[in-house]
Length: 109
Image (cartoon, rainbow, N blue to C red; front, side):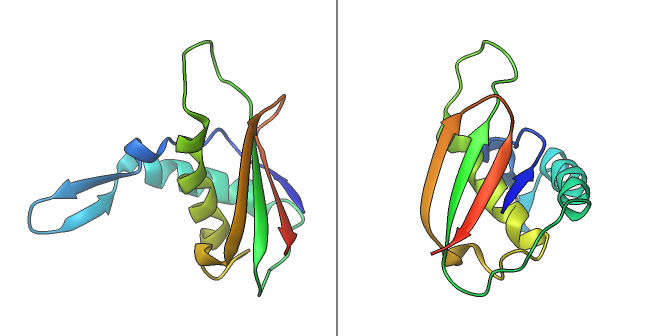
């Protein structure tokens, strides 16, 4: 299954620590997860019960230097948010690459 998604929020921008509340999602991350979730829900999707492999293809938004692996956490969480996975621990193999579009490919392991 291949799903097109908006460019993910980097891992360092997903959560922050608040005194008395602990670790919470940032407003930037909440906004992205809602928008990306809407895009995923509009596409043909299925639910996976067992182990899966996940491949992230990300289109570079500009010429700045970026770490590709920082985009994985938000992408994995999105699959749980949309009900494609029950938990991101189902992902037993991950790959990531720069490409011409931003998408996630999931296959049963």
